[in-house]
Image (cartoon, rainbow, N blue to C red; front, side):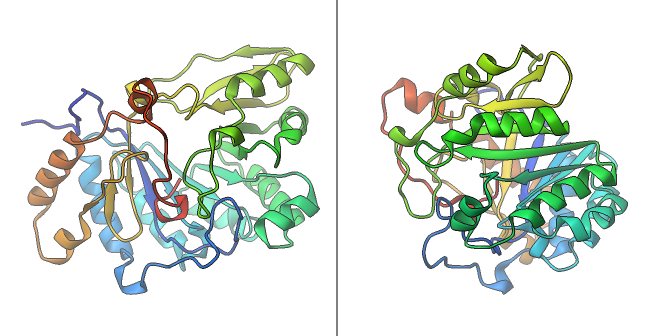
Length: 330
């Protein structure tokens, strides 16, 4: 009996992206639609349902879980869920992606609960631009949260920035300097078609090659060995400082060894981020199906995982909006 989750192309799922809520206290203008439609509370998976699913996933060798949203820290008692997941022994790494708003006050609690890594989405280092984009005047609060996470002793503190032409591409070197001077791991992400207002276009994509070229003209850098299944090509600064990675989802996709699977806040499995198909596992949980029956279902739907955006690009298929990212989780 197959003890792994393997798709039709031989890729093995090892990482779970787990959305615990679709709601967010920011309204980033490249993420959220004007009037977001939230999932009704009764459809959001309860902690015991999430924990059960993660246990089932872990029996297949899925051993890395990243909690996301929406904004996961607006989920009440999130520390309780983290503690429960941290006690699932096959899980080797438990992280979270957050906008950082609540991080300064929660970092120590999250660490004590068993969280190991923190990734903060920060798309501008300029206070006025940050406020314009998020519609929240909290730039300094987010920076305090990032430093609180570092002080709390997490194994890894990363900062994600989606780079968009004409919006924040003039901050690439500022972000690099932030990583270099403060010892953080900066992640530059190519703009993808998951924006709430459907304004994405190839003309707004700043390629990883362009990002790397700008940084390498100022700093001496060396590439790091790529871990199988990694979304980023990583580099370190020669004379110390932090590191940075570039996620080339559009210009140089990494679909051939993708090992991720996504679970939405309302219990939909999304095998491929660029595919419209979602599979309802919440109904199985709530209709009394056994762990074995759910396991068999997971094997069937992972087998159907699409080849990914890489195949679309090779066949010259035009990329189109799939869904807003806040509905899926990062």
